[in-house]
Length: 309
Figure (tube, rainbow, N blue to C red):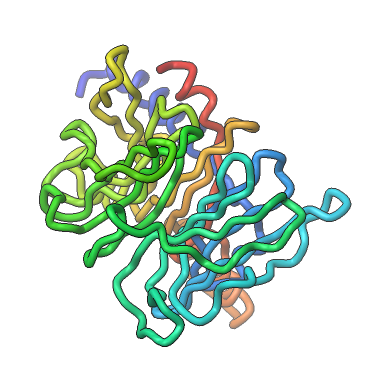
């Protein structure tokens, strides 16, 4: 390393550190739970949904918060959750449909099965949610379908480990033709590979896609968030690593709030631990930090990334 390069590397390192410092906890109360993930918020900022998961990840339920007099309410479970593994909620832009993944059976008398994509709906934002509705074929199969996100034109993007994938988990898309969903297609190789690509968020206008790649050669250590933009012909460009937001731990479950240009995502990152402890209180304080290696939801502005692309 030459002496001339050293100042540049130091400046670059400081700049990256400053950008990373802009990633902050979404809500401090999330630290009350072992694992919390999959955040989605309404376009008017008045309600939000997320998943709460048990320590061994065998239990999962969907919770929500609402603004009351400009203050967020205490979390409560949604009306339809609590019996099966429900997770990965996605609220449509108009706030009238909530999509999610679940292993619930197709009938009340059935047994839990593979994960399918479901949704609930309501007449307006003041009314109650319906009973869960299975999206059905051709999207749901005997394989697992996860992490639904829907564009404004109702095209549905999701993760699947079906035999149509290139190897492991891949990102698929199904076009809404005005009456039903068409046969899903796997996104091109600029997005998918023989490895793990999962939990994709599609922008409302379908101009960009954010998702996780696990174990990529240019990754930071685990699963990283990547972003891809469409070219002038409508094809997905090769995605690139959002390194300024990622950590050495798993970073996943993205959601973009267009009204505030905020990216929400889940991360298992942790802060450097204190080297020594003198009291049990000090130790408890350390392990109860927001950034303690458990799934937590974070937020950061995506404005600069979008303006540069």
